[in-house]
Length: 311
Image (tube, rainbow, N blue to C red):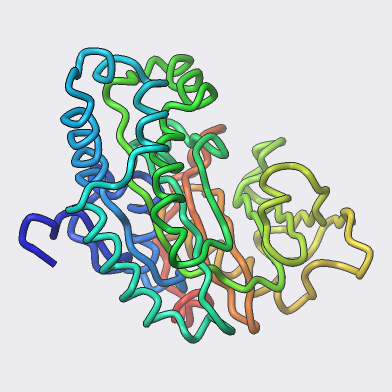
């Protein structure tokens, strides 16, 4: 990779940049990996790559006035214009290296998750949950097109409206993109380490479905739901979802997930919202962000003798 392209790619678990380079989601995943939690291998195409692509688009457009101020025009250009040579070379090189790394998770041709990571996303102030693009089951050759769609989603109508409601400027918006190995999930789960409805911090709420969790996150299926007591880690209530083959998680998998979630909460020092997937008996952390409602609890850092999520 050329010297000019080195700041365009950061590998999760060994990134030098923070949220300003990796976006909120990328920075959180990098932090989780550095803390020893099992995160799918991957890299982040940084906000520097995003800026380089915008510059190339504006140079090609001849006139920068409209593109400089018009989010929808920028979105259309980002989705349709071929990635610039410098950014494209860096992305191709990183993608090829990742293909070599992910054999342990793949059967046949590897598949990837391509995920938006905007500045401010998954932060304590603003989650942007579900507002930017995420694409699953992406073939290696389809990564560049998925990246362009993630970039363009920065100025989707719902994302722009969200920023407007929170008095955030469209002009300051930037997008990194995370590319990770796709976990062949037997089940996917979302965990709230504080009850999201009652705000009780002595209870966790876990929802899960079999397979990939995309439909659950999108709200198109009803997941199984557990309420778990923090102190005893015992199930207080269970509500079945749409699954016809029994509970999405058995008792052992549920217990392991509770352990991973409480360790993440302790390391983040505040209640968190976690997305995870289990494959071959191991939980992979796909996302962890601070809960943006209710009071923080002032949690102390603890280090159990074994971290279920480490690996």
